[in-house]
Length: 311
Image (tube, rainbow, N blue to C red; front, side, top):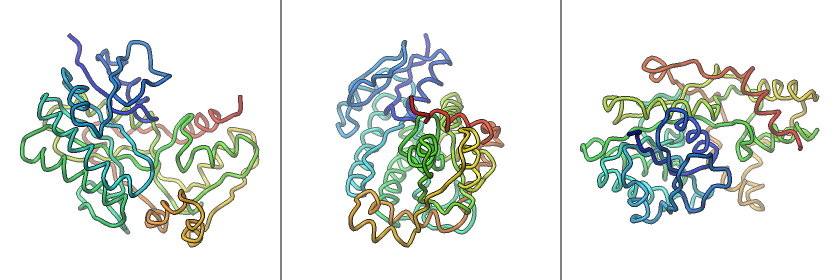
């Protein structure tokens, strides 16, 4: 009998992970509020609101493993309550069913750092959205440390990939270039910044799903291609599209002012600490235990950029 794996969330990372797990021969079920229009053939579906404890428990029933790739609207007020509540429900479901959990996390909880990020850095409580991720981390770590569940977290950096629009290197950047316009950028274009390629994230999730229990109860950073500047990556994209590179940058000091008129910009203000200096993520721990051959930017960037071509 094949292993039953429930993937909570079918956004870019959840969808890529579902496809990756399906290739392993596992029985894969996607759980979220509405059925995805692009659900692959052979993948099951379970209606589930992660803010409903009974719905989460029902979705996890019969699963040997769950993958958590959920997201919430990018609003600090929403995150403050939604993330701790959802994680409480997911932990309870793992306790009830015995399923292992692989949580696709992010890097917000490290706060302001001046050195490469490592898994041993303590979680901080700076800013509403980072604080929400810290609270979610505390919930699953406490349950894991107490031996109540088997869980682990994968932490990618800012991600990108074919058709992934709502990211730093998404529609406003690669999409704009594909439409013959200047790439919009909040990140300083010439500061090195680590990015994670969505297919590599999915591969890393599948690696942890297949890992023994001894690799759980800890955090892993997702492998990335060697760090580049946003300008270098945008140049690869422009070359792949056959257009001249043009960048329309947004000074970080302007975000608070723009936030007076734009809720989206207002939510970015507290995240400026990630963009004021080189943002390096140390993934040697994952590389030494599993693999480190992340997809080269010379492959991932052209593929992503061409996916934004109109029509």
